[in-house]
Image 1 (cartoon, rainbow, N blue to C red):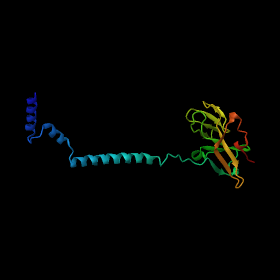
Image 2 (cartoon, rainbow, N blue to C red):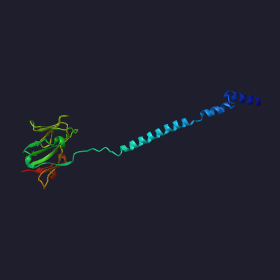
Image 3 (cartoon, helix red, strand yellow):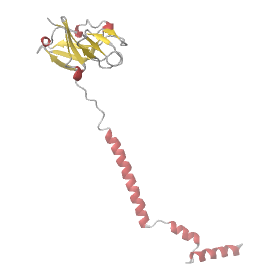
Length: 193
């Protein structure tokens, strides 16, 4: 057995060619050279820098939050005398989403959103009513539900006269609902004479 070990060792030395055992040569061939080390170190630093850069980029995203810029909810629409009697003023529908209605001795602001599914109705002058093009709901000039699938009347926005300059101030954030009996509340309309 001892002679086999000696012969095996001689074969390993002969295979390596320099008198060292083959296992030692294989271990040395696995050793990392300077050039190999620098290559791995450079790759590691590049990967680390990319990972840190990605983290900073994702953190930097939070420095610029998603902000929705909306028009102010309170704005002036003009003096009460500027609105013709028994008329619907559609100038503010596109920008503010409402109509100014002068009906008899009252002036109020109707919100231009159908109470069915939130579509924007249109004022049909020839019929004297608001008509929703989506599902056919109809509303009177006062905002009351006339027909269609809408469950209730249109909402009114708060309206008041500014004491300083006499202009109408509309606040679309404050709403009045007919079915709750709020249309007769003081903020739901302004008396015009």
